[in-house]
Length: 241
Image (cartoon, rainbow, N blue to C red; front, side, top):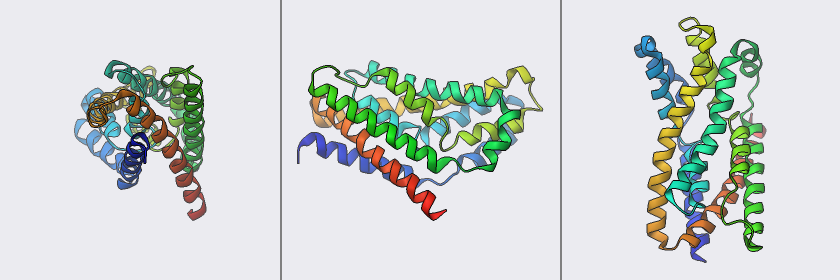
């Protein structure tokens, strides 16, 4: 097997295992942290965001690692991570600001399987676009615009409901005009921890591959394989629900 495909399979398998390894633990952890740090809600939200960024799912480091590996330097890997996390943070800040209108809807429907499928299709489409463009010599790495769009879609999956729960818990403690800070601080904390993971994995894979072009192709293939996995995960959740 080609070295880039081998690395992609290993990375994808490891990331898929990571995504499946943790149950929905963030909400109870968040409530516990708020219980002890409620008066210091800014710090509490930032800590919860960091924990969220470390928890592997369809909008944390398993995805940002794939995009990061496509970049030609650590600085660009951090930039791709910030673009993805920035899109998430924008959505989450908006959701927390509009809490009173949207909470009843999102609390009544489990959207995770649908989001998994949409995110998976997006990942496969992006990977195919980049691979095809790369063969034509047009694109060397992921276009930040598609990373941004992917981030906007991914923001509605997994633990995004935690942003709404946090808002419901804090709305009586903070001024209404600061509601956006809940999603903002959550997103910033998530970005910090994701950035750390991306840098560590980037340096590790580059050292193992000893060739940036191999690592870049491995990142593209890993994104495609993970996209297939996310679609399967979404369909499986719908069938078994």
